[in-house]
Length: 432
Image 1 (cartoon, rainbow, N blue to C red):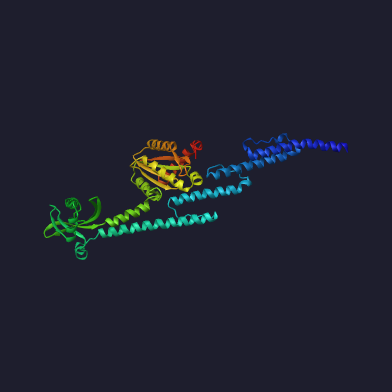
Image 2 (image 1 turned 90 degrees about the vertical axis):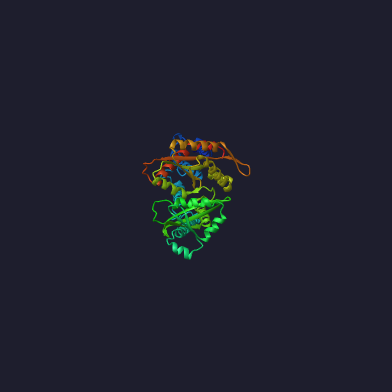
């Protein structure tokens, strides 16, 4: 009996230190993971396998915790846990879903409105409804613009002077000698127009400059111009018809007041091609111009710009402050160049297209703008201070470029993310 009692005593003396070490290890894993260490090789033989398994479990736990932390910051470029880490399987599924959602969102921003989300519950319903509404709104605006422009073109291309005179006497019609510029005929609406204008000579100068052109004298031509009278701008469409007028080689000018229709088209274009929040050009306009410059083999730079910390501002300071932050960055980017095209691609992304810039000059300009933004302390309406920042990537497009717009943008996007990664610690040291 004495031997059995002594054996129990010895067993307790051996197991208590192991239990203490396991307790301290688990406490460090929870609260001080950077210093958590377990030397299971020093355990009694009966505990070594248990200690080895516990360390393996903690490794899986730490991998899962690192992935969860990265996802909470929106960092989808973080390394994934090992394939045999079943503890992180749900987090890895969430990571894959968010990566796919990010890709789909970029596709929508590029104008692909066929994207749909079939997971993530209520969020998927809201996202899909938003994409449908964006497509319908874009189609409606572009269709209306095209309809109005077609109507105007049809009106300007009327090709029968006699039909115009007999069926549309409200039109302003004037006939000139094409060689001397002598006025041969005007109808009553033109007389009224001239009576209400203080610059009759200016109107005749504009008409004659086109009438006396010798090129393509037997072809009907249309042209639009404006006149300013007492600071009021009036727009006209002038269609010119070559004809013989009582022995004269003449040109008839048919004028139409298009002031109202042009104002309507300008208004629609402002909606279709402008970002609703910032008033800058939107993705649709910017991508059209981008492709046009590529087709024209122009020399220019494309700057892909991403606002830093917008998610933080939205989540912590509120979306109203997030909008103010976006407006502030858009205003700052105006200083890049008066001739540059600044457009908001959506969310926290902007693009600058600048002709006759090289990459170094563009990067220097953006770095200076970024320095000003970082140095400036922004304040919420409630008085909370914070600082803004941006990351950028620049690609120079030369006249001999053969790459499509999508590949050039992809290069700019990669350079922007490399810049963002290189300055990550700097942003952490900056308030907000």
